[in-house]
Picture 1 (tube, rainbow, N blue to C red):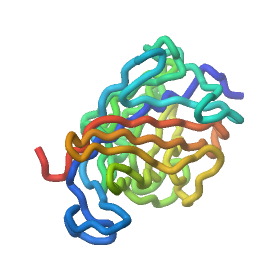
Picture 2: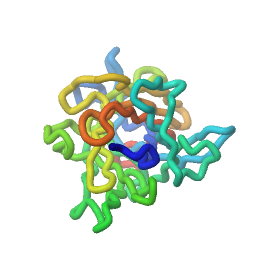
Picture 3: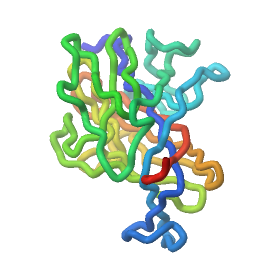
Picture 4: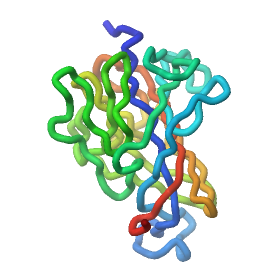
Length: 238
């Protein structure tokens, strides 16, 4: 049985978008992108999460109870949250500054400490959740499903973002939880929603959100809601 307070503080990870654009289906620049949009290839550098107005801003994560709703919950409470509303788990950028598109940021070896805390720190810094650190990684083979998955991909059409984060994987307490959209088998079960967001072509600021229902394991049926915010830096830029 799951202890409700052992909430998977999988931590919200944010993405940062800029103009290292590639036309979808080709290697052309953004200026010649097609109607379906252009790929943003680079690093979505994350803004650290912050408590704001009774909620949170920047990069953060929430866990929705089985049978709940994305907008209204009910939500798990993380006793390690620094916010007044402890259903918000804040995230800080990792050593890479955020999430990279067009490549993987895999789990380290070993992936856990002797006490089960995750060591992945490239996307977000490990965060305590009920005294156990969680981490985020993207791997060629999803460690929970055992299936090959593509690297993250974000596309821009006008000021709107879309794409897939099928490889998004949370590690916690010697366990893995796929938190991608779609899932490694291409489906979107339960409350899993497509990645969506907004992008400012002048400042390169972005906001990306999606939700992903846990399939299997001790948190089966719970749903993670991810809010990523920051600035995009294209590949090759300083």
